[in-house]
Length: 629
Image (tube, rainbow, N blue to C red; front, side, top):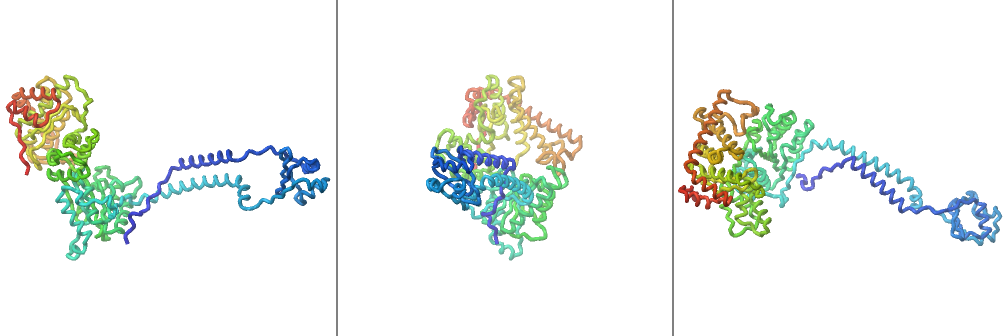
């Protein structure tokens, strides 16, 4: 029987004890003040002896006598009041007669006998005594409850904190129609959906569906969205939590939560368990990388046992996502656990157009919007970047009080996502503006002259983010591979601003600092990762993440000091050669450099058409973009 996922009880929130004490004291004071204001002030009542009462009866000064138990309440004709006590053994009439009051006087004086009894009479009499006791008891009970709650909370640490998506929840349901691109990944995952819907087809032929599916890829490529789409297509419960939610300060909590998670998933089977950022607990054991400790390793061991232990779990599919599949423990990746790995790449041009179409569903567009152009201008954008692009475009339109999103809004949002918002308030001095113009003109001119550099789409000296200006260049077509010649031209283009500043002004500013970092990092990667050094040869000395390979420490180096010196020499050689190429180009085309810089000082921004017109007038043929079929 499946558990009622929708009505799963939530853990009660335990309030702070100090807050409860303050609230209780405040309530007690409030009740006391209200009682003080409401209660009647005692009247000025004179206490009398029974003999004085007898004299007053004889004098005829009493208007009325009320007898309540042993109390005698007297009202005089002058509206004053008095009280006295009578004898318990005899009635008031007998007592007054004994004090010499004649029957005629007694008859002339109204005497009322009141017998008070009942529930409310008892409550009103006991309330002044019971109320303080009740308040003290309530206060003690609240304190006891808080202490008990804090103590019982320790027993909930081992419970899983997975968020559950009900398959009948239409508002949160995601299907493959909501995921654009990733065609190969969706094909792989359709088998998982087919198994969850019709497992008999696989079991009859002796096939075992993979127990674990590992989604790897760059951040923002849609790993979590794709996992939710699998659950939506299969219409099964979806248990979602992050790898960091397993580990707590108490030893054994992570393993306990893993057991509880799989116990819940088995009761709701067929179901999907999705662990996001699994590298938080699934890193290589015994290396100390990522703060390894016994608690994390116990959690990993429990995951390994649950996924491929003695008890079969053929109706529970475990999906996980990570950006760093290379740091996961080998035991986690072996067949029988995460034995199917789905790689999600950055989307290509057609995929980007499909993703933009999905994010454009609820946005009113102007007639000039062309999503194909936006897709062409966003190489390297992930699905999350494209969502942010569309959202920023809508925000820009709303900010200007327009009802529809125009193409110009989307073009501006591309640059905003890439580099940040424009800083128009960041005013440059005349000299700084001139330096920035020559700097960006140097980048753009070298990109236009070198054969393997990408064509320029925009040049601007308006500050964005941390950049004082920028040169936007885009490839002629989609690229999966890059050659050594392209890298060398990119490095020379990065040094174009540095060379232009030195050549025109005879000095260097801090402007090219980021360019130098990017170019140096690229030159080092050519030598240590891609084997593009003639001196060192085809040897990979570092991984994509830096100086760590195969789970070894961050400071470990797998090469000697002599090789390290060779690497430094090769990087320096590449940078110096690129510097020479950039200087030769700018020296030869100095007039074009001056023309671009002066135009930038005048208009601040040059779009592709304006830039191409300018360099064409100076004898440079711009690179033409081929028609993409």
